[in-house]
Image (tube, rainbow, N blue to C red; front, side, top):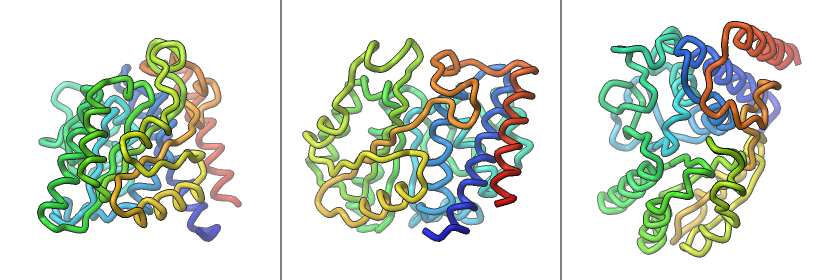
Amino acid sequence: MNQSEKKALQITACKVRMGVVEGTFHAKSGHPGGSLSAADVFTNLYFKEMRVDPKNEKDPNRDRFVLSKGHTCPGLYAALALKGYFSWEELKSLRHIGAMLQGHPNMLDTPGIDMSSGSLGQGVSAAVGMALAGKMDKKDYRVYTLLGDGEIEEGQVWEAAMFAGHHALDNLCVIVDNNGLQIDGSISEVGGPAPIDKKFEAFGFDVQVIDGHDFDALERAFNHAKEVKGKPSCIILKTVKGKGVSFMENQVGWHGKAPNEEQYQTAMKELKETLTGLEAE
C-alpha cells in the first residue's frame, strides 16, 4: 500500500471515529468502545477490501458483511455514511424512535446492511449461511463477519465455525475484534476464550493474528485470506477498546455508555486535532 492510500484510509478511519462519538452523544446511549476499536477494520473493509457499491447496493455479486457484534453499529453506520449509503446527518438520529439507524443493524430499513444482527453469536451463523449459498450458486462473492472477543464465548459461534470448516467455506472471512474487554470486565476474567487462534485452527480455519490498527497489516491479511483455498479464514485483530479517544482507551466503562456534553466536546476536539494532523502530513 502506498503512503497516499494509507493516509486516505487513516483520515477516513478518524472520520468514522468522529461519527461514533457524534451518534452516541446524540442518542444518549450506545456502545462507543467497541465501535472505536473496530473503526479501522470498518474503514478497510468498505474503502479497500470489499466489492460493494452504494449505487447498486443489492447487486447479487457484491461482497457481504455481517456485523455479528451488532451493538457496535455506530462505527458501521459512520463507515456506510462516508461510503455514500445515506447522509452523515442520519448519525445524529441514532437510536431515536422512528429513525432509520437503530441500536442494532436492521436490514429492512437501513441501506447497506446485509443482515439484521445484535443477538450475540447469531451473526456469524448468518454469514456462514451466506457463504454456503455463494458456493451452491457458484458465485465469487466473499462474506465477511466481525465478532467481538466477548461474543465468542457464545456456543453458537463454535457450531458455526464447525460447519464452516466442515464445508470448506474458503469464501468466508471471520474477523475477531480482540480488544480484551467486554461489558463486565476483561475477557480473561469473565469468560477466558483464549487461545482464540488455536480454537479457530481446531475448527479448520486458516488463522492470522495482526495489529488491527495497522492498515498495511490489514491489507496483507485480507490479501492472504483471499489466497487460502479449501478452508475458511479467521483474522484476529489485536485492538484497543476506545481507540482514538484518549479517555476512552482501555476503559471497560465505555463499552456501553454515551459521552455527556463535556466528554463529547473533549472527544471531538481530540479527533479533530488528529484529523488536522493527518491532513497536514
